[in-house]
Image (cartoon, rainbow, N blue to C red; front, side):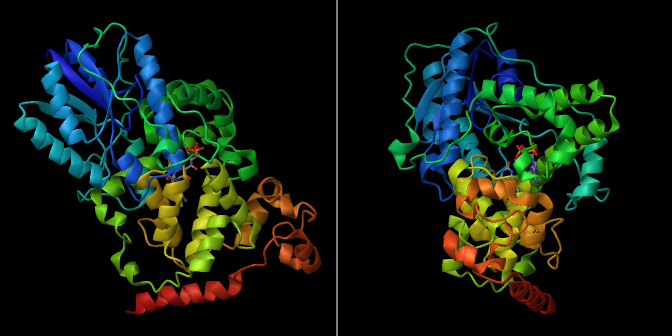
Length: 470
Ligand SMILES: Cc1cc2nc3c(=O)[nH]c(=O)nc-3n(C[C@H](O)[C@H](O)[C@H](O)COP(=O)(O)OP(=O)(O)OC[C@H]3O[C@@H](n4cnc5c(N)ncnc54)[C@H](O)[C@@H]3O)c2cc1C
């Protein structure tokens, strides 16, 4: 092949990038392209944090490609129109890209395949974001897995591929003078002003995070990961979502880190981290095999749940003013930083669905708009798990008590104190249930509980049982 366009989507990196690496191997000349589509700013799930992270990562990619002697062609508009036009202008015989698994992206790619074909241009898609995709790990009966543990066992039984060969200076420069580039908009220019403090985007930032995590924190991941104040996670999720790091690079690093330690607990921690990465793959294959999860419950009978959908309660949950400190601290962290600890995502999601009796879909959408790592598959999976409506979900009668969760995972309230300064005068033993000291509560300005957990628990069980009966 003489000339190939590599279309960057959620793979904003030059290393361990399957389609880019293949383009470099098979074509004489590669034209790197990024298209800022209308959906980036108008879709119902668009959020400033994710958008700003994406824009930063594209800018970092542009610089990195420039250092390698390549010009990233940036265009704003419709991929269906831009790609055939660019292919014609550059004399490209094919467009390469890495696969996406969201239903809307699948439909768009189908349309693009025929548009490009009509223009005599090939469109090749490569598996890249995950190690194993939807049909590669099936049950003995040939069906997709809907339970995590056996899926994970089957995943681990397969060999893990090495990172893809890098793309770089050895590949001939792509600049073609007549291909103009648009300027990327800033997120506030297009109606999404960034108010959250988000981490830096780009491949270098991702590789530095990975290096730091694997040099030490990974060995304590198993014991630290559940405690929000300890921040024991890798913080790689925004990068995995934007594709500023390749999954095979993480797995290769993890394998090395595991081999370096002789400590049994540290080895176990590495295995726990691997399990979390497999959850990501599990939910990606759920999304691809059961796309109806984007429209409603994985188990359709749960679409009949009679949610209360109380607007005031929802507003209090969003603003972090429910009167339950662990829920409120987590939500204020989300609103301010575009992120939330995994344990707290489960706590607030379960609280919305099972204490406030508000549809998990409202929470799912709010998360997508706020999170810097918003990912359709993982977010939907996490919400349906918490609400008890999904694959391998927490059973409906498993309802987290927000106070016992807080006392177990934030004893003394170190995390809560960080986000709820109005509770500073409460002693450690009352910080998670300030209503126990009504005088101090009144003085603090912190809200009263908007619901009573024990009462709501009973209502929630009745709501689920009503569906089960029919
Ligand atoms: C209600 C709810 C909503 C969620 N929404 C998202 C989301 O939009 N995007 C997202 O990436 N994750 C989501 N998660 C999963 C998880 O909370 C985050 O991946 C994690 O908190 C990110 O922090 P980390 O990078 O430090 O993770 P680590 O603990 O370091 O884990 C490593 C990586 O594994 C993956 N991972 C970890 N846990 C899960 C999981 N339960 N499901 C799928 N992948 C996982 C992530 O890619 C993560 O970066 C959600 C979980 C819940 C309960």
